[in-house]
Length: 270
Image (cartoon, rainbow, N blue to C red; front, side):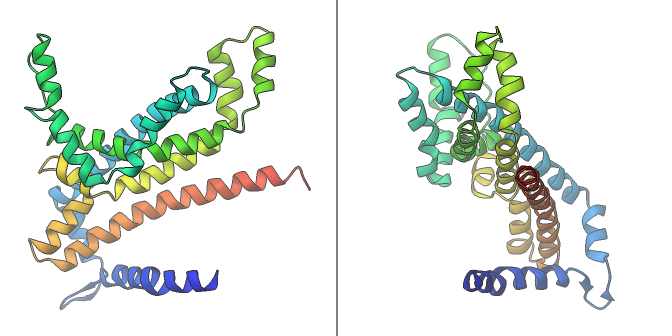
């Protein structure tokens, strides 16, 4: 593992630490927290951070709900449609984000196929999600769905068919089986899927840039605009450091849960 760790340290960890350390130095004032005070004193900066958190939570909740429903269907259904649904669920994995974004514009836009279809059946008043927060959420759901489904299917693979059949034999219904047999055995997969998706969504750029609103903005778009258009590298560096801190907290949660769960599973074997 040494070569991989060395490459990661030289090209990722060290530059990131240098960048974060640079946010504590203010030109002409020396060491201080002025950059962070400026960030949280700026209503636009705080609004963009809050917007990023809101989009992340909304997309994450929808992803887990949709992904879990698809994973349950693929795991337990005997229908002939299982293969087709699996292909459709995994299709976004092979479609670049920018291609999917422009395809969604053609479908969800004000003159898109969905609007034309609704008008054809007599439904007027369609409000497009394009250039709204909901547009970014829809695009992010599409992009992250394959990873979510794969992780949840992996968790469902641990559920024993014999346990489910035994529960049915004593009269347990679908919701009882799900709540007391299925869900407890896949909580690790759900947490892993939530953390990995949260990291990807919080730092996403292409999909929110194309489908989302001009204001407020996701943090990735905001820091790129601050750097390239406003020519304020120090402020952009501070925004990146705050984004990195949030992602680090999510990563710490993921690490603690995975290692604690692994320790709990290994304890009986001792």
